[in-house]
Image 1 (cartoon, one colour):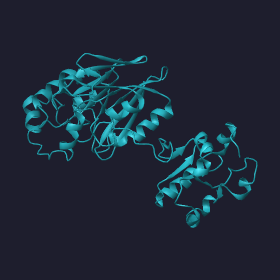
Image 2 (cartoon, rainbow, N blue to C red; image 1 turned 90 degrees about the vertical axis):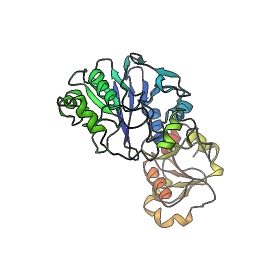
Image 3 (cartoon, rainbow, N blue to C red; image 1 turned 120 degrees about the vertical axis):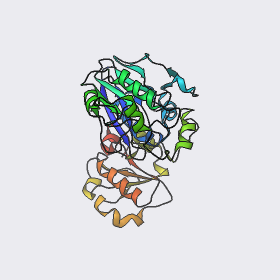
Length: 350
């Protein structure tokens, strides 16, 4: 199983893209709506088929990206049945198994942070995604959403600490930059739950945390009770000036096939040298030559009335050119995907 861990710096949330390398079937655990473009770009670039989004619980600090992913990829949404949320395609219960290709995740109920928290254990018991039940050297708070310190203590000890010592723990959050741990480490060293901690110790610790409620609590929980459907940005944005796609690297690109049909509607800026512009690959009809090293000083030569498409040999220099123009305030800018090499491979005119 391939695991890709992602981080949302605003909510300190980890999301996990898991996929079977043979079938390319995938699941996405705890997607964050604000990171939808990033996660969707990686799914496209890796060529995986997203079957499910799985939320470990109804989050209080961010809106889930589950609904947005379903609109783009047609995946099914999984969330604990205990919440009674709407738009859930796969109501999850303790003991269920979620399969994707040759891989599988066992669903374990680990309530306590909230009443519906779940953890997901790999079929070989080598990896567990613990949500907010068990964090690296910590545990999720228990003071709202039907939380219970006593219940969390039982959940962790029966459902998580029963896993092998070398089982890798992937949490839903960390606020200190820690990415993972192991069950053995947490059983021995977790200052709240490990080292032989008794129930009374844990309850006393959790009841005196004195944490303020999450800033987005009033927004996130209602939105997540509809799996993110009712949140702004959950539906795909209306088409803009063209089918611009953001890559995993954050570059906005436009397909050469589209550009070939709309050359007259955009301004094409070629950032190569004069020798390349007049060389073997040629150049696009009507394109303007502005070498990359001169782009910053000659931006006043670019029209703000039409969208701008940046072009070079393979799309690398023009990607930097697109970044320069966007940082300068031009919003309708994209890079030609694959550059003129790809353009020629497609047999498009130059």
